[in-house]
Image (cartoon, rainbow, N blue to C red):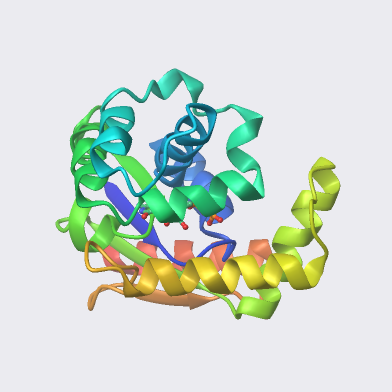
Length: 208
Ligand code: CDP
């Protein structure tokens, strides 16, 4: 079984996806971490994101064993990730790894922005996880505070999320959008457990 989970920043896709993977015994890939790794390496190498071929070279050399690096969670990395994610050659360089991951083993849960639309258009299950920008900023700010890595206040986090939404939804290549067949879960007023239950109920009904 392949489960595709898309949605904007900090909507809860990662948490729901991890729980689904555990429940169904599937592998899990946070595809955002690939774009974050490209962002991190571009920052480290002082590469200008306008230099598409230099950034594409970085994307071609991403080492999946570095995807748990805490630097990936920093705000400046997220910001750079959404800038480099607009570059078609970067997306092309990361596509094969994601497709191969989805097809290996017993199946997988992948979360990101274009999983149901581009990476796994034939996924068995497609979910679109959403929440208001204010609620998402509240959650992300709390996460950054807990990790001790908050570099701005709530307003700054909200501005960064809104800017990233705008970039992710309006880019020409693989923009963030709900696939027609995707099941929408609005988590604005739901707990993690309630959101997860909704996903499970939907999947179990599909399987009948
Ligand atoms: O964790 P959060 O939801 O804030 O973001 P993420 O999933 O780690 O993704 C970081 C950035 O990578 C996004 O803002 C997108 O620009 C980009 N991304 C993408 O373009 N396509 C994906 N499949 C996943 C992430």
